[in-house]
Length: 193
Image (cartoon, rainbow, N blue to C red; front, side, top):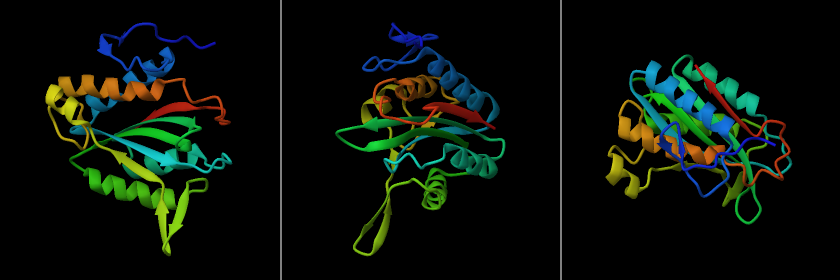
């Protein structure tokens, strides 16, 4: 069994204690965010959820290759597969850190949407003759903005308070809850460039 965190902090950063968090996942999250903070000029961390077909036909390697080919050496990518019986079914929770000097958040969202439309296993619904992708961007909540400042769009990782807030927010991706029905061999991962 994987070692779970039993405290409310990881390396001095507050973490989400609502869920069981895997210690090795928290280490990877920290390393990915620290890499972005230390190597990207204006790193912004953006959070998304992608709805997936319940047949497990989505290939994370294809998405990872697309992200790597587009963002080259200025990104960090953290992902976690989950299956929520009562709500979304199979889905992918993710955080992508990019350089704001090169990519604004709206452009990143539109690029990801275009990529996802062309990948197998992503939930696409047809409503009134329009294809609708199951892809959501998550703004930062007002309560966190008042504590650490910044914008609703994402976390500026060069700002210490926002980095701390991002560690808390990203700790959700380390959770072990909602993994039982996920059939992928690897349910969590990070890549950096």
